[in-house]
Amino acid sequence: MNAEEMKKAVAKEALKFIEDEMVVGLGTGSTTAYFIRYLGKLIMEGELEEVYGIPTSHQARLLAIESGVPVVSLDEVDAIDIAVDGADEVDPHLNLIKGRGGALTMEKVIEYRAGTFLVLVDESKLVESLGQRVPVPIEVIPPAWRAIAEELEVFNAEAELRMAEKKDGPVITDNGNFILDARFHRIDDPLDLEIELNTIPGVVENGIFADIADIVLVGTKEGVKRLER
Ligand code: 5RP
Image 1: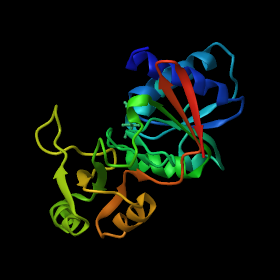
Image 2 (image 1 turned 45 degrees about the vertical axis):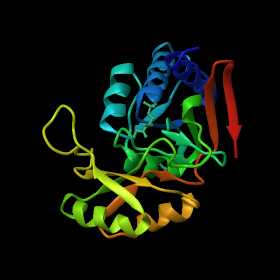
Image 3 (image 1 turned 180 degrees about the vertical axis):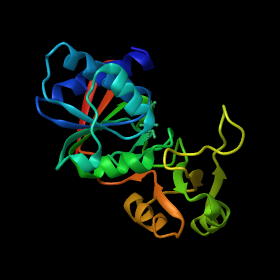
């Protein structure tokens, strides 16, 4: 299996967790995009009834509408049964780094509240400790970006303002903010760092998701493996 086939395999496996009448958090990124498309197909074919999706981003919302998944917003529901999303890194305790797609804030808002948080990755995302492959994205309000980037030096981190590729200037998130990508030399305690980063004034949210993933489906060459906390 190549990386794309692994993404499709975990997205198909995730459908087994979805039942009639569920409210499903819809993640952002290329792996979850397969899941949203497959989910829409089951709904359109009448295999699943009364299933509603809560998107974590404009990307997820547009794709859900295009795929036939009825969309609701967080303030319209009493509870979220399950949230399904990708990740950029997964450590052996199932702590995550997320936010390559810049949707980390709404992802965390929804995934934190879901009855089950199901994560879909291919095996390249598994790391021994967080921060090995990717920096930690931090969403910040625009006027504070430089002050926060300097403050991150206290944490022994180098932060870079994320620049847009098809627009001049910085990436603007779905919430109208900037993203700093922070490289930490070591992340010994992800939960501690996650909490501490959020105490810096001007930080909206950061991409460490410690202790919230329940199940991780990993696409490997041999098939889909299930990791559980
Ligand atoms: C977006 C995310 C994505 O879930 C994460 O980047 C994984 O994406 P992909 O499935 O494309 O590798 O956190 O903010």
